[in-house]
Amino acid sequence: MDDDAIRGLVKSLSRPHSSGGQVIERAAILAAGSDYISIMGWITDHAGVPDDVLASKPRRGLHGARLHDGAGTSERTPLRYVVPAAAFA
Image 1: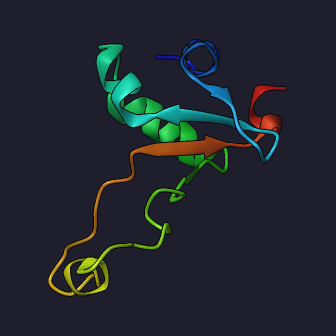
Image 2: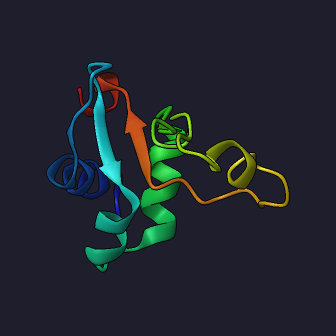
């Protein structure tokens, strides 16, 4: 895929983010059936970063701290990525 085609696809699959850029779900990229590797390369080449909003929420409840302290867990694949607005200009 060429740069303009990827830009258009990412723009159509993303939604506004509070940072002023766009946020795109990893699942949307996979569901589009396009070249996942090329799209992820484009996102990182244009200063896109993983959005870890959900990972930073504190765990609550009686056993929340003990069960979700991060011990023994491996690095998770990000669920969404934030792309700055400048990437679409």
